[in-house]
Length: 296
Image (cartoon, rainbow, N blue to C red; front, side, top):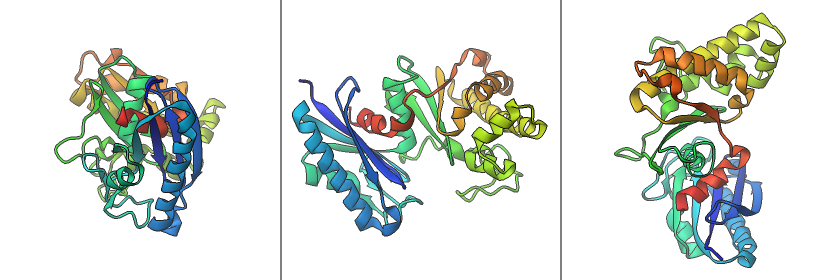
């Protein structure tokens, strides 16, 4: 049998993990609540229990080669230390990779969740076969990952790829959670849509499809902002493909069609119209696949 890997997705609400083979077939899947609000000792205890459960589940399938983890940042992907994520109280300078290796006796790598998701889509999902990938998760916030030749681009300090905090309106009165103003995350995330529309992105799309003029205006406004932002991304990175996941992306073709029309008008890149903008394929388990991709 080929060696197996464990992929673990750490979120503020739940932990999810799977046993995968080298072809990214998920053989076992488990999840449990994170219990993050109860503090670092409790939530780390949940991680250790889930890892033990997954290792037991893996035993009938073959040997484990390593453990890959997608976690909320900020973190250092080289050392596997998690610094201080906003949705994980008490997780301050947690040496997660080192502790997992000590407890499990297996190699472990830890990656920012958006980077891991992007790598998973590049290796196993919608961007398979494309060398340069820009991945976006449109959800409560906006996370991004830059994948070049099957590797995450981390930058000098491991902090690259924070595309959600690119400013598209430096005069905006909207202050982002990062402290800056006019970030695309602050203006076009699911949280922003709910604030402007008084309903979720999916409800907004449904109202627009039913002919509601105000919903149509708000959806068009969101698409214009995202399209302008993606135009700048294409000017900077010239990716082979743009993959978009997360809850807001589930608006589907009404959003994607607008972005494909707007983005080429907002970039100097003469080839932009040929850059595909496609929905992610790995959906709810992208963090598990991301963990597997990181260790593979």
